[in-house]
Image (cartoon, rainbow, N blue to C red; front, side):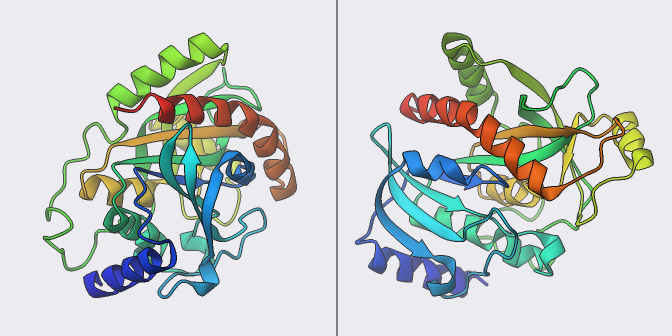
Length: 269
């Protein structure tokens, strides 16, 4: 796998004139509009990148955007990959491995999720403080020591300094933040009421079908992570899950997330 990761990274470097991003960004369902605020220098379609899977989910455009946000070099995934699409966990997390080879020092992840915490409302931004993984672990299999240790520690998965920076910036910008634990499940079904009650009982505040594998792999490689969930529905209500509405609510809340991410990237050390 390491050879394939390096081959893909070498291809991308050649296509982007060795553009070296400092920050990797993963844009979730309905949140691809953040890409419009990037001063793009290079754009690559996933289908044109050797080794890359292809996004099959509506709302995930499927391209890597290289450019600048607040003067900092970034690479953004406009669309991610999911286990429920039939990809292996190694394929789902492959882009994170490649971004590390390209030079990223931070990873920002976002997703649309169902609220479990009854104090949350549709459109809230939840800063992820921890997660519960209910998917196959992407590190199962032979460990590649060059990428990270066999038994990586998952304390402080979501960087406390970045969370503190987000809190300060949100206060300055007048953005309300929630904080909580993200439960990552396989999907593609939206959760049952019983499942939401179970997630609440085990300590979850929001639930979704992504993010956790990417974060595990990033931490395996010692990359600091900041994560945000956009609450697009309230799981313990009688609402019926609908992907189209998830995209709509994601786009609405994405405006706030864009402001937060931009200020945070601007203030990175």
